[in-house]
Amino acid sequence: MLVSEMIRRLRVALSDEEQPYKNSSARLMNMLQGAYMDRQLQSNYWDFLHSRGTFILTEAGTANYTLPTVKDIDENSIYYIKDGQTARIPIYLKDYALWAMEEASGNADAPSAPSYLVEQPDLSWKVDPIPDGIYQIYADVWYRPSEFAST
Image: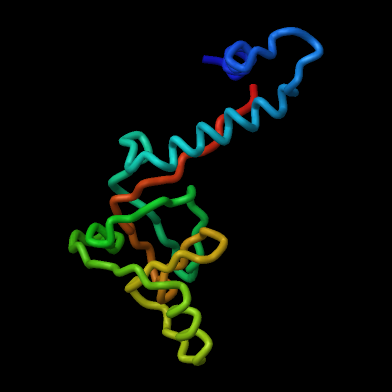
C-alpha cells in the first residue's frame, strides 16, 4: 500500500476528508511513521530482520566498521575464520564502558586476531584488537527496522 493511500485512509478514520484539512499530510505521515516504528520495535525478531552469516569482513589495520543498526546479537553465535583457514574461533562482545576504561589505561594491544566486538556510541562496531589480517566474523544478528519513505 502506498503512503498516499495510508494517509487517505487515516483521513477517513479521523473524519478529516474535506479541505481545508484539520491535520496536515506531514502530521499524518508522522503519526503513521510513529505507529509503524512502535509496532516494529515491539515485535521481537522479525524473520526478515534476521541474518545469520558474515557480520564483518575485516581488513588488516582497520578496527572500526559501520553496519546497519543492530538490534541484537546472539552472543553465543559470534566467531571468526581467518582468511585461508577453516577453524572457527569464538569472539566475545565487550561493553563499551569497559573497553573505554581499558583504552584510557594506555595499554594498547598490538594488532592480532580479533578477540572482542565493541558497539560504539555512534552504533558503529570496533574489532578489538585491531585485526592483523582478513577475518570473516560470523554472527546471528537482528537488525532494527528502518523507517518507510514518504513516497
